[in-house]
Amino acid sequence: MRSSLRSEPDISQYKKLNCPENPLTIATFGQSNSANSMTEKSDVAIPSNLYQYDWKSQNCYFFKEPLLGADGLEGNVITYTGIKMANNYKKPIVIIPFGVGGTSVLEWAYGSFYNQHQIVMKQVKESGMSPRIFLWHQGEADFKLQEEVYYFALRKVVESTLKSFPKSSFGIALATRCIHKPSNPVRSAQIRISQDLPRSFISADSDMITGLDKRPDNCHFSAKGASELGNLYYESITREIKQN
Image (cartoon, rainbow, N blue to C red; front, side, top):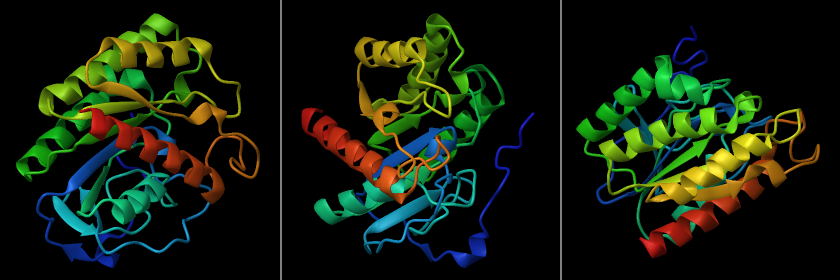
């Protein structure tokens, strides 16, 4: 069984802050492309109104990569979304990351990461945080799964999340590409969930982001690829907030 976080940043190197009042909060999880797995760290200026929440310590910190609470020690694609939102929304933005590299939807739905998911939901709620958006980026590890198997597992993850935070929306990335070709059965399952469950939506088609300049290892994103994905997230989140 995997440990919940195999690679953790040194929390003493982060600036602890009071969690802001009335923030727009985005939680992101799934496998490595929702964790700290970029092929490089981001080299971008961080706005003063961009925060991160660490679910383990239940504290807020100034936004800095690698993000606390997520697996890995590199950059995170959500950085580009967070920066754009912080620059365009006149309020604090809080990011809650808890993705873990290499994980299957089956683990999040039925296995050890189901328990971690429940702990994160409890910790976030106890801290008074209320994510407006959850972003799910997972599927690369499950490219061999049958459509129905993936569908019912992801449905369980979405329903469990929205049971904890019924006013939230749940964004699902079309994410199945990692060295191998995209998986049509998994993509179909992801699309069906967005059609079948209220308050769920497609956040981005990450499978369409290709090329060694954007995915140097044919799987994880460079700064260029992460920026493109971050813009797609921003656009879909903005639409979802306006509609709901």
